[in-house]
Image (tube, helix red, strand yellow):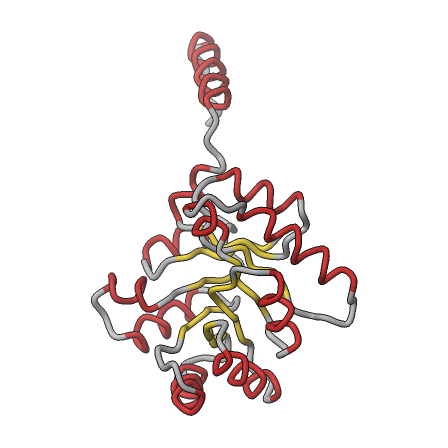
Length: 218
């Protein structure tokens, strides 16, 4: 499974990239707004850090506006992935961009039918939001299971399932068990993945035993 980090924090992206934990980056208008910087500047800096896809989302809601914004964002760097909402205009824009060889992430997916439409439009990625479904007492992971089942029925579909709105490590593990292609996670959740109390206790015991020897490796 590929890991994308869902942030515009440059320090986090650099640190996680150096640790080999980042295959790409996802952003959205809310994340960019928190940075307090211009979108083009942030996206350019992120693209220079990671060679993987960097999702940059349009803010227009009409087809022509999405095309104009998408072309502007695409010109920032070769690894920009245009992010469009799962609306009729968004799917039209997706088809237009993918026909030109541009990566497209269709976001805000909440049903298997929507995911099928995104694949029909040629999306590079579709982003189902599992956490937001959980928030309204629906099963976000069932959505992932349904999408994966549908996509496997049609090998000609090339769209990758990018699990979004991940709130905790269990979401990631369940998505991996279902065979989802990508998960995008906040930096805090990525760092939770390697934490375990038994790991901490084991390390403490090893170091304590080594200290008793009075030796030094170097």
